[in-house]
Length: 264
Image 1 (tube, one colour):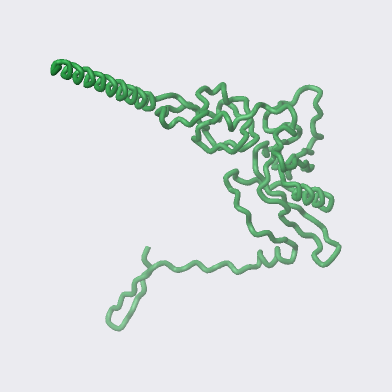
Image 2 (cartoon, rainbow, N blue to C red; image 1 turned 90 degrees about the vertical axis):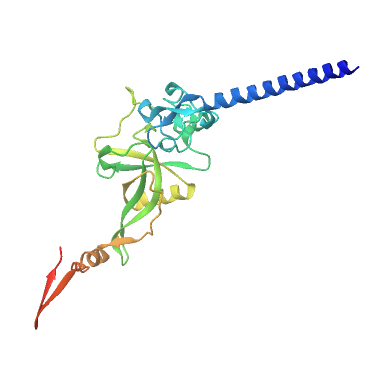
């Protein structure tokens, strides 16, 4: 009887040891797999929403598996050629849910609740063609008022995205033979705006001449708006230039005489 209890206890101890060994082995393998280094695709620079992603916008980096986000893209070819459905910061892991297929129609990349509106710009107003889809701009208008203000200029819209320029939207479609080109010196910029801003732009274009003012994509700050006319332009130019402050100096007393020496 005593021997049987000893054998039973020994068997239970062995079973417990085997269970704990298997448990800790599984835990060890899990931790090792999470610590394993794997290649992940990240953005080489800021990518604005709606921009067609190219290979030069991407780079491969190594991450421990535990820091790889769910849905992270592992190969460049799985991201290059797709459109960014949301802003992607520099060195951010490229996630599959932030990518969408290359659009065949402009309407496919217009977010719900937003509007795409086009304005005609010449070479100077369009910054000599340097404005590209994905850039952010302000829209500045020059107007003539028959009332007291005369000719004046004002910022109409701030921080709106260019989603197409001369029919090329977000770099996702190249111009082909047979597609109409803009007349020489004349371009069309399509802006992504809210419905109320679309009305403002259409009204402003009918009342004056519009220009695009290019912004850094990370500069989303809205500045206080003011109008500029000939009168306050002259006032700004006539402002007194502030005097430069003198540098530090040292006063030296020799008997009854004093001398101030400017320090460099």
